[in-house]
Image (cartoon, rainbow, N blue to C red; front, side):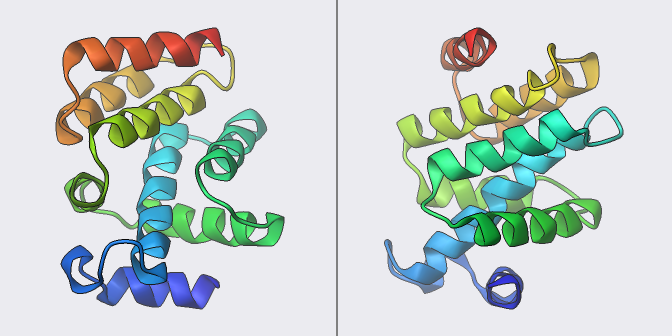
Length: 151
C-alpha cells in the first residue's frame, strides 16, 4: 500500500480520476494525513499522544486496517518533511470535499493540536492558515476548534 500511495500522490491529479474511485480515495487519505502530521509537527516534534491522535483521526475518517494506518502515517510523515508548501495538499482537499467535509477535516486537525493537552502558538498559527487555505469561514473554524477542545 505504501508504494501505491506514493505512486498515486506523485502522479495523480485530482481531476484525472472520477469521484469515488480508489485512486482519488487514496490521494485524499494521503493529503489528509499530511495535514494532520503538519499540525503534529508544528511545535517541532511529534510526541506519542500526537501520533496516536493522527492515527485515530485517520481511523475515524477512513476505513483502514492497522497496518494501512501505520503505512499511511509513515508515508505522510515523509511527504510532510519534504513538502515545500501546504497549498498542494489543501487544493486537493478543496477539490474533493464539500464544505461540511472540509470542516470535519479541520476539526480533526484541531484534535491533533489538542492531543497533548493544549494547542501551542505554532499549532494555532498553522491552523489559522489552514482554515484560510481550506476556505473555512471564521465561525465554522471556531466551532470546529471548540468541538475538538471539548474532545
